[in-house]
Amino acid sequence: LETPSQPIIPFIEGDGIGCDVTPAMLAVVDKAVAAAYGGQRRIAWMEIYAGQKACTVYGEGQYLPAETMAAIQEFKVAIKGPLETPVGGGMRSLNVAMRQDLDLYVCQRPVRYYAGTPSPICHPERVDMVIFRENAEDIYAGIEWPAGSPEAEKLLRFLQDELGVRKIRFPASSAFGIKPVSREGSERLIRRAIAYALAHGRKSVTLVHKGNIMKFTEGAFRDWGYALAEREFAGEVFTWQQKSAIAKAEGKAAADAAEAAAVAAGRVIVKDVIADNFLQQILLRPEAYDVVATLNLNGDYISDALAAEVGGIGMAPGANLSDTHAIFEATHGTAPDIAGQGKANPSSLILSAVMMLEHLGWQEAAARVVTAMNGAIAAGQVTGDLAVLRGDVPALSTTDFAQALMT
Ligand code: NAD
Image (cartoon, rainbow, N blue to C red):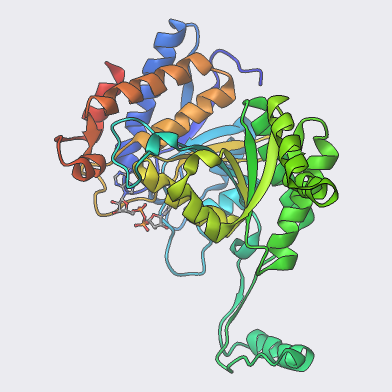
């Protein structure tokens, strides 16, 4: 990516703890950029509005003004704090609206351990994964009908008439939800995950699915993934589908040898695992996983479970990406219980800004923030969420923690 030395980057402060974590992020990033480039580069931040603050600036009900979307469209890269989902009135979540309107089909979430962070597992230092979660399909497409609605009753009749042979009885009070998963949607996500693994020297891409139960959606995700890997990345990857074909023809030893040879040749191993087993494996042997590509709902569960291994959602960054646009965002919500009290951990948003700096090609500034984060947490300089879990250090305020990253 060609980045000018003073790119304009729109930012949304966010609701709730947005007013705590966003100023902290801006200060830390400005400091790192200045230190890395000695004034040669600078981000020209441009505040744009969404959520409550947008209602104050633009008027009641204006949660996501057209100007905000136009700015993101124009400048292509943006960063945002959390936004409260407005209740009632059938409003879409603002986050979902942005993802849909900009077709941000990838949710990318790196999960990395900083020494000194409390963790429920024995070897959190072995956790180093990047999750690619499909962001547009699956149950999040929002196709649901409540029990007793004409649509649900029609479906009920259809299922009883057409599928009655399976002897499955649906109570009259059944509600229904539909889970669309397309080949195009799955392929573009998996393509990004494999390309990322190749570009970043990662060892494997694991397709996480529930194909044993949902054959035509999640099972197809796995099959489309293997087919795409072998078709578009031939010579660069080795898949477990290829491995099992060798095992069938020549035996297990030959298959193991073929995989070992592929690893030695620097190929990325594309494998798959069933989601429930994956959630067990990341507790027992997280080192077995590297880049992960998965469907929307699995990705939701997996992201939070993995975040907990490295300090919780206060530590977990994220980005929503299309082929042209990127919105970097904290993965947590607005934390109304601690909003405006200077208690929030700004690391999720700061590490999202690290992803943004890397996206801009400003690796030196990104590395400075990561080094500072390593240093502060290892020295026990942490906010309340981590201090409570550690039990041996006092809690720093949001601004004091940001200050620790800047000194
Ligand atoms: P939440 O993430 O806001 O809070 C869950 C718990 O984690 C709370 O106890 C909170 O205090 C704590 N927490 C979260 N972030 C923290 C941080 N940075 N530092 C310290 N502690 C932190 O989830 P919720 O309460 O379910 O949701 C509140 C609101 O946020 C809802 O309106 C929801 O729709 C919205 N939300 C927005 C996003 C987003 O903008 N991407 C994501 C999730 C939820």
